[in-house]
Length: 217
Image 1: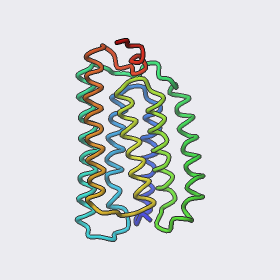
Image 2: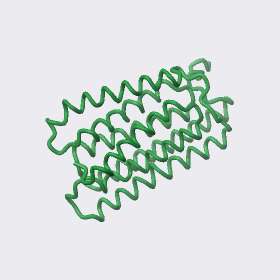
Image 3: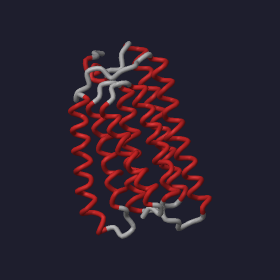
Image 4: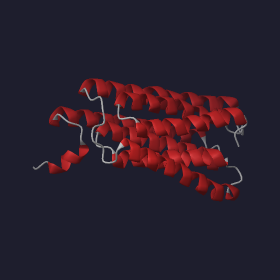
C-alpha cells in the first residue's frame, strides 16, 4: 500500500481529475497539459510504493517516468499541434458530455472491480487499483471516440498510464530494467504515432482518421 495516505489520496484524486478533464475538453492544448500533469503524477508513483529495494532504484524510475510521461510526450505533442495548426477536437464520435457520463461510469465500474479484486491481491492498494483501471478504460474511450489522430495518441498515453498504474498497484515492484523497457517502448510508440499524425496532416490537410477509409488507391 502507499505509505503516505494523504499523498496517495492526492495522487489518486489527480488521476481522476485529469481523466475527466480529458473527456470534457475539446481543446487539444488543454488535453496535452492534462496528460502532462497525469504523466508527472504517474511517474511519481514508484516513490510512493512500499520500499523493497534501494531508494535510488525508485528515484531513477520516477525521474525517467516523469521525464517521459510528464515532459517528453507532451512536448512532442505540443510541437505537433503547432506544426499542423490543429486546435480543437471537432465533432468527435462521442460528444464531451456523453463522454463525461461514460467516464463517471468507468470510475464506478473500476471501484466495483477493485473491491472484488483487492482481497485476492495481498500487495494491492484498492483505491490505486481502481484509479489505474479507470485510467485504462478512459484511455480506450478516448481512442475510440475521437476523430483527430492527436487525440488518439493522447488516448494511447492515457491507456499506458492506466496499465502502468494498475501494474504497480497489483504487482508492486518488478525488475528495474523491465520497467525502464516498458517506458522506452511507450516512448517509441508515441514518437512513431506523432510522426504518422504529422504526415497524415501534411498529405491530406486534415487529421480526421475516419476519413482515411475513404481514400482510394
